[in-house]
Length: 324
Image 1 (cartoon, one colour):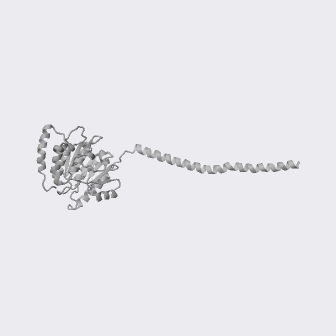
Image 2 (cartoon, helix red, strand yellow):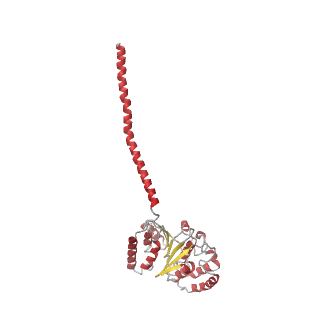
Image 3 (cartoon, rainbow, N blue to C red):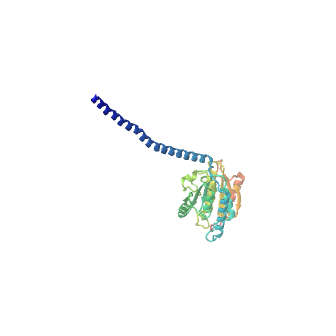
């Protein structure tokens, strides 16, 4: 009996030693699982909330939020003051308040807009700001100026362009474009592979694939015979507008339109019938996509085409020998 009692005494406590150990394990596990569970639940909630809010904002918010009228008016106001204060000797191409207002009206329409600007000027930052959440690409002959512009203003794209033409060659270039060699200077073509001397085919490839809504020609320099002149920029802008894949019209602005080279080039490639208005030294054209095959940029009858071809050389001869 003693032995059995001893056995019972030995076995009975052993059972009591095991039960607390086994019963304590779930408690420890729960103590570890509770923080992990709540951490995972909190993380999943944050991720779900963020994804939902971002998707809802994408669905509800418009593609482009226009600037408040007060902000755009203030930008135009201070840009006009800065332009007026700039000496004419250092800023010969500064735009007038009326010219700024004409361009701004096109930039402030519903978007987002693709805006292409030839030439860096004091007003370039203004146009980039007005094209809020749109795409602004600037082309300039000065590599340093293009690089500095990108560093100063976030979101703007600037590229340097090598112009191979000169103002002194304007007569010859126009004769080629409207003469026997005009097959290379078609209004609808791939500029990247163009053999026309007026075509700018050294630009970044993606520029040719964009459907531009607004094109501003305020460069390159064209005030001397050795300057590149804006004939290539005007021709390239006309081809981009008439080759627009999505269709529709493109607002094309030409600054310094009072100068002979800019005026003759615009009338030849952007066309008088597409002119909307002239404001001071700025000309505004609305160029529509060309769906017809041919070599003429402007809509002309055979009679007017023949008279134009005979009159165009005479208009070219009016250009001053020294250039502009």
